[in-house]
Image (cartoon, rainbow, N blue to C red; front, top):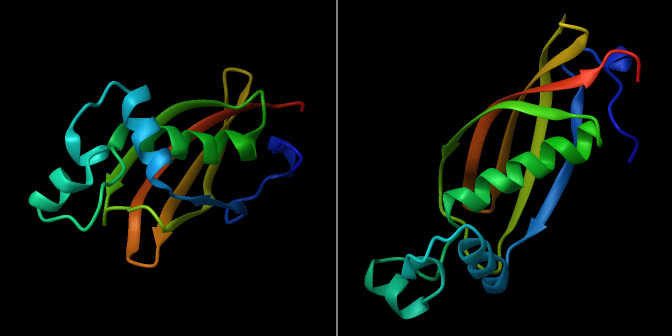
Length: 141
């Protein structure tokens, strides 16, 4: 996939979808990497005692995957300057998160292209995370 070019963007442009297959390893590794040792993110028995059918992803991992979705599209020169997310349904092993989004506003400021994006990650249970972000891109590339 080629990086987004500010000059080629228009409001309403769809970002390419990103599928993230969710495994127990992905969930536990994300929790460990973000130093979130809450047992609901790595211990199935503990998660069950809390009423969950399995372990589930933590919000810090969600933040990382949202950023990945945006920068995979924006390319190596994209900088995420604002990220606002809202959690929805939990995501469990065996599900796939599908990220989708679109450009909601475009402006130029301080020699950079400023791109506003609305996005969501959905599973078969519904929206897992939704939000908006601001990215900057070079004006000339």
